Length: 311
Image 1 (tube, rainbow, N blue to C red):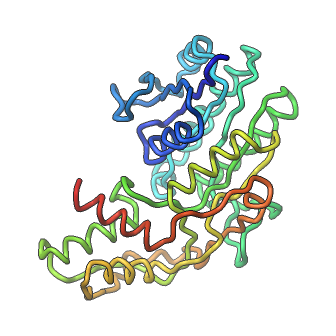
Image 2 (image 1 turned 180 degrees about the vertical axis):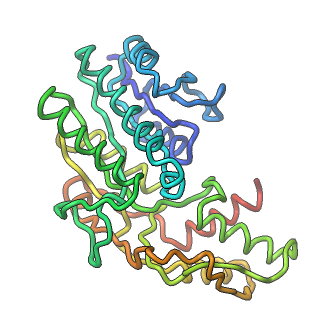
Image 3 (image 1 turned 30 degrees about the horizontal axis):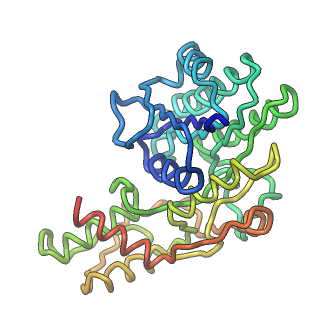
């Protein structure tokens, strides 16, 4: 029996390495190829190609030669702030990369299953727990692009017979996340305060907003289950189902580091239109696919502290 073939886009991003780990933990014989823009990848023991996913011909050639059983589409411009800086660029990039993959599969007549990763941003500013059956109300260029990707996914299933499953992924954190993102940025600053590298003056914006955070290792476990078990065309929230204030993450980190940071609110860092609460409902993922959370938030923070200290 031939090994299953996994093609993972955006392999050099935060999630890519962890997805490789979960595939190998579940399958003894697999063939994995990663795609990225960089010349090389740090992910060990995989095939790798440097490919611009916006180049339809090159994407077609890769898929025609590799003929993957699964495509995990992680590559994207994922910053809301950057999407406002270049709305057209974000929309065109995120949709072109997905469509080039889907078109290659369609034209080649492959039975490849595609995991299309979306975002909780698709829901918009609801003031309640977010369930998959809610209408979508995107409010920024990034979320509009994600909704478009989801709608195109469904169109390719309905009209062309492709096999595509989808996520609406909420905030995920863990060891190795870039310190440009808010939680690793907080942890990095608090580590520097604890070591005396910087003064004890912790500048923040609104740290009372509530967000839904999931450990990246639980996220990729959800992705693997959705990819290998979910019915075609299905959509799942990938989230913890719990709301946490940013303030609580600061407090947990500070307690683990044994410090009391002097917190100062910087008015310039407060977004007037920021949604106050974003919490997802993960009932569907748990009931249909048997997914469960393994990592508690304090454990995730501890692992992030260890990673940042030793990098």
